[in-house]
Image 1 (cartoon, rainbow, N blue to C red):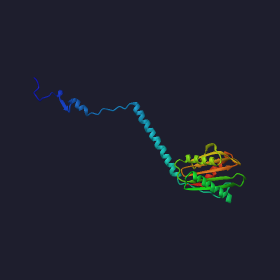
Image 2: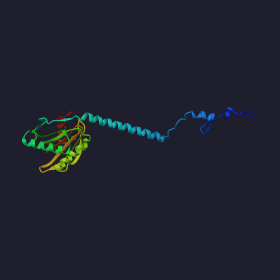
Image 3: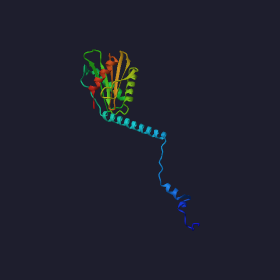
Image 4: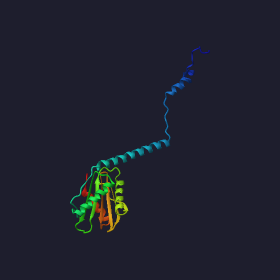
Length: 222
């Protein structure tokens, strides 16, 4: 017997949704969430991006730590550093003033220092020290600029290479430059709070770099 008008079989129930016709079974299926499968490639990319983000955050954190711990450095010129004695003669003071003016003209600093040290046990092994303090965002670049300054005034610094910066961190480099009186070993260090250069007369690079670490320990505080 045919169904009465307006009646519908339970199996043939038809629901109109907008212009789309769905059966009751189909309509109910729309509410069931289907699992989303991620392709292996997409998963690999996501993990890769996460790894990069973690490494980047770690590097930024380390750099921020270096800035915070180094930015408030101070430099002094003590009267004695090991066997080195501060030369207070007028000629030495004039040389120190010249070195301070030269580096201040090349690199903007809050405070500068300059000094000439003589080695009491080794005549002819004078050390010319100059530098300054400020917040250095790119200390290694500023150190390279300081070496270029010496190159402009004395002669190109050759065989420039990194050496141990010691427990205070940062960067330290040494090289050699030629002068009218002979070759000079040049060393310099930089961190986020200080930069200093030293010119060593009659010292080999290994001897000069060792002495530079002693000078830094005696002159830099944070």
